[in-house]
Image (cartoon, rainbow, N blue to C red; front, side, top):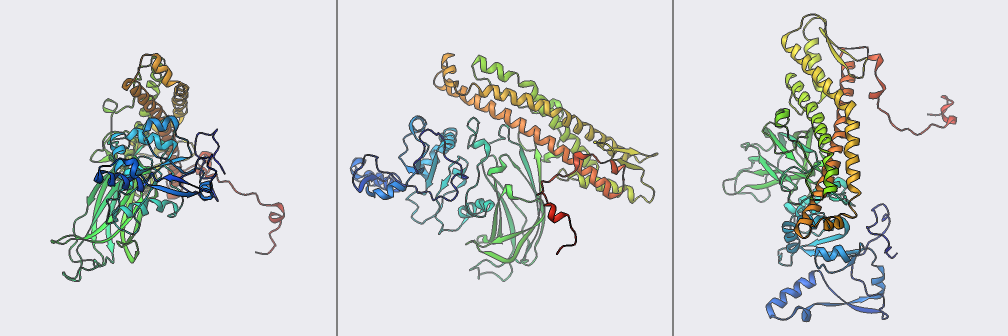
Amino acid sequence: ELPNPDETYLPSPEKLKGKILIKGKKLPPDCADSEGDVTDEDEGLEMSRRLDEENEQHIGGLQRKLKLCKELSALVSICQSVQFQNFETSKRGQKYWEICSFNEVVASRFANEYPEDFVSYNKRFLSRIYPSSMRIDASNMNPQDFWKCGSQIVAMNYQTPGLMMDLNTGWFRQNGNCGYVLRPSIMREEVSYFSANAKDSLPGVSAQLLHIKVISGQNLPKPKGSGAKGDVVEPYVYIEIHGIPADCAEQRTKTVTQNGDNPIFDENFEFQINLPELAVLRFVVLDDDYIGDEFIAQYTVPFECLQPGYRHVPLQSLTGEFLQNTTLFVHIAITNRRGGGKAHKRGLSVRKGKKVREYTYTKTTGIKAIDEVFRTASQPLREATDLRENVQNALVSFKELCGLSPAANMKQCILTVSAWLLNSGSTPTVTLNLGTQYPTMEAHGPIPELLRKVLTSYEGMIHTSRTLIESSDAVYAKLIQVQQTGLDFHEDLHRIGAKEGLKGRKLQKAMESFAWNITVLKGQADLLKQAKHEALDNLRQIHYTGQSCGIGKNSSASPDLFRVRTTLEPIPETEAASDTGPC
């Protein structure tokens, strides 16, 4: 099936179901013979260039020619191989069904020198990255370097195990090690700002704090071939984060001496993840040796696949086989850090007042009409940040007074308070009024000072949550309206900028600022919407936990707002009418 020239984007994976895609060269339409000559623009061209440098001849004389059968050429549809010229030429003339292949050296240069252009290119076209021919040992490149640029196909030397293959295998684990993995929306949307070399928080993306407690290991084997030392290993665990430069980090536990059966680490770690959809977590267990630390096992998992709570992490050997009964026992907690900026030492427990709060603003494009539109978003952006941060600060204060970490959920907080009350040996002096949408804590008689502080903090949390829930829709609508108005300029942005006298680097800067503003508005609107959903979820946890732990009252008046709704298939009347049929 030939591609439709009237379309501008590749078909979706849904439309490609049941089809086999063949990447290759294609003969020109006017070729009348049963076969024809085509050039090899991939690995063959690279080898030709190297031979050309050695022999000091023109590359045209050594460029490989291949014979291509017309029947095979006819099978190539939306993955037609063409040679890459430059980003500007591709933007003007490349068809959506054409695919370019890049040597890893060239692709690395693009990723470092033109990261925004490379990301924009991959929004419209497929790209394939292949290993350099200089890797005569069949070693592997880091696929993350090219995934962060949006490259869809990164070829690997599967015969060579190690860190790079662990990342590749772990990344596709989120889809059953087959099929597609969707890129982050910020890398797919037509108008968005993203740089592959981002070294800080991204506009409109909610940074996450990953809390990991490495508790213990189980049945850690002796490294293969390590006969020089005794039979007992001395393990330690490396925790690695791979992703955009802002996320890459690693930390390690202490070494446990002479214990491979059940080493106890009991150490806590915290990582800030700025682009969660592209981050990968890797656990590596090594044997501490003064000659050289030896590999024991590893496990790699995408950040988006992490499940909070206590988990046993299965471990794999160097070649990828799962080691029987060999695990790490860990605790995982993930919390939001909506303020942006750099991570603080204590993460969410560091609260921000309004005077030190980091607000997100739009950038000036230099085009008067467009800047006036974006300027109207200044107040809604401040309001959105204040609504989110006020709730966040109130939550942290309440959790700390309950003696819990910022990673705790609302259910744990209510259970802690109820335990204080029920273990006091008398009738609870504080009850939860569950008869309203926003449950209140009511004191009956004198209460201890600490409990009074908890009640005051709880009231502040409920008040800020109510303000967020009742005000967020209006602020969200304002942000989306400004974003949509700004998008109306997108088609004519280049012409409008030229009319304003912008050209060259100034025009490019104006277009980057425009994309930044669109990304910020959509991102902040999405964060506000997410914050409202989380506030509603907190209220739901308060309601059901208070009802079950014995300190709630008026629970029969539970609002419909917190009832879980699921879509069920209707039961046919013939089946539902009788309860005497066969089981």
